[in-house]
Image 1 (cartoon, rainbow, N blue to C red):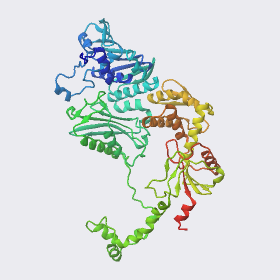
Image 2 (image 1 turned 120 degrees about the vertical axis):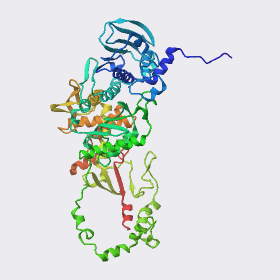
Image 3 (image 1 turned 90 degrees about the vertical axis):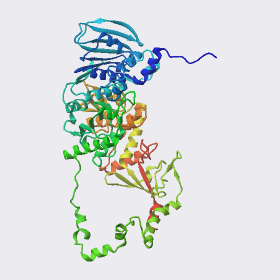
Image 4 (image 1 turned 60 degrees about the horizontal axis):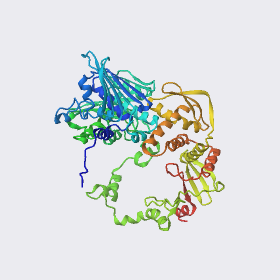
Length: 622
């Protein structure tokens, strides 16, 4: 048989290798910006057309390249940063493997103009599909301009996998922000389709954070600065009120290189324990500087995942630094030593602890259990009868219970850890509202409703979320959602990344009752909103909607429409701790049981629980 193994042609091998580095336009943006930083630039301009599919151009005022270097830069593994293997463990630059330009040249049409200060003329190179088409002298200013056109023009299948322009633009902005935050001493600008969307002057790190993430953060940032022998940690964390429902504004940099680390994120979350809600995420922009030999950055093609020589030390230092910063600015919660008046009146507090009482307490079995060695787990046998009643309270319903199932066959209320297995039922069987009467609200959060079989405990927020979800689904399908015009249109200013996201959602929001129009750079005019949005809440409704949409985008793989509808339903639903009138409760309950699936929210949480009458009677031993 003939030999079948052969070497791939260079252009195909280059395209395969390029796939590891250049996955989408944002990947190329990252590599080109980092090259400009490594070139010592103090001003960097990024130009984008068609979300990077048509053009990505980076212009810098760095040191430029000679004619020979300009040609060599496009060869695979050509680099000025590594000369022997030991250099790999002393990396202090952004790029070092010499793959970026070679990968870009393999999947795009590239034009390079570059000039060193000491050279009389610059160099122009044109490359397509890894082949140099033209090389000649050119008149050019000091620095480098590299333009990448028609990404994946020679790999149509890869191009077809790119997302919408709005989605790809969001990825580009994410990569740009990571580089811009790392180097506040460099001027950056971004021009997309001839419109400037970022203009970042040189300044301090705090100024750069505010420029990018929004002026509202100016008073919500806490400085972190800890210098130790092993490493230095500096940057800013947000006050608890700046926490959001998404991880968006969380940035870690090691030796000025952006990284992703769930391990270090856990350290920061631990520092915020009991200060923010469990489902919220604090803002942070933190830089860790340590010896390059203590970290391995060569473990991932994009260099966003790294390994520390001693992760536990870094974890401990990061958590301690954030805790110290929050404590230093009096943000950590303080202990309240004032006792509740009702507690102060108890005998144990108000009356003296006499010698007789001390002797009585010391002779009790409970005291002995917790003071004698190896007795903390011990319970005396003769006291077992005291537990009998409580054991029966939990066990007797289980003995008589059958497994309850919903229409779809899913088991309901049969968890072995739930104490009300038989008597507490959540079901999706639709009920005529005539059965439900005598409504009452408790804790401004729940509605008690009597039925012929017992009573329902309805979560008002979850119930309203289900109602709105089905209403928005119907409106989306019929395109008939009512909108109320604002008497005075409201202007909404957003960060650049949120503005890109809102532009992506405008047509869908219009279908669902929002009348929003672009109004210059990162600004919008809200002309109208759905009828259930209160006057004066238009701006916060949109801002919260975007946050919730990003939350769904990061956690759940649904269509854009589904994520938007779920976000709207969550945002507009009546929240807990909101008092309702009797008429409002009647309407809420009536509309809930008109839903096709009234028992659960879109995310699967129960909207109500049913307590059956016979089970209630058993509790009282009838």
